[in-house]
Image 1: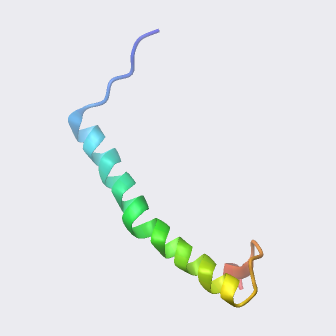
Image 2: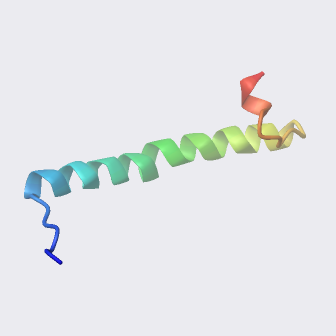
Length: 49
């Protein structure tokens, strides 16, 4: 089986996405979950109303 290689540019794109997910997106989702929990609503469809 041939090894899959990644270019520096590809690695940088993945690293940038990972940092975004951890530093921006995850805290935003955590805040939404906390707000829903504070209102007593943790159902799957809580944000879709």
